[in-house]
Length: 312
Image (tube, rainbow, N blue to C red):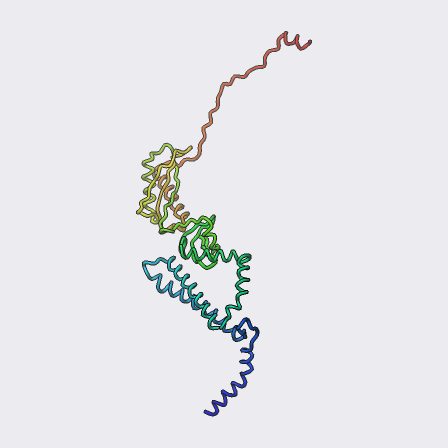
């Protein structure tokens, strides 16, 4: 036992310079003495706070909320993100209290931060506030199919500053949150995942519109991607220059992310069906009418009187 006590005493004597080095004050801010050990503990606490907040969000979203049938995935992600922000705010205040940071000494830092926000950080602040608005109002959510300008894709993540959109080409596009607040956004799945698509079809003037309607309805009903409720419909759209124009109106949930795939499938089937029923697919035609037998006027004959006038 005496040997063990002697070992600890020797160990403390050897390590005391190292402990003194880590505990020695580097700088003093207000009443707070900043040491190397203080900095290490602060960094460790902040890193642990971010780690534990991410873990709590993951467990809350994946293990609890998404298992509930009354909460969709988008709402679950919004609740998880807000919970993470609350934990971070409470954690930061706790770290400030436990590390003994003198908040009165940080007044000049707050003033400098305000000036920075007014100039260089205003875009970051705008995007952060826009992110909070998105999480509370939920005009968009994770899993929605959206279109912003020429960009179209699925929302896969909503962060504090930006939102990630995954396109059909598997390309992730990072969009600032302010774009969803300030610009016009088309949300294809805001209410539900059911959308209506229209595909134009033209046939010859020689065809019976009722037969065309029957054939096009058969094509729509045979496609597994087209919903039966609401049922598809064929609308007689217009009398075109060279064709009778129809609109095939269908509802789908499977192809909300790939409307061009459904369009291709239907057009392949339409072409085959029209051929089977000998329904003509027209192409632009122009009739030219050429008038024949135009009278050719000969020049007026020269008379003696005109010759006499010219010699004067």
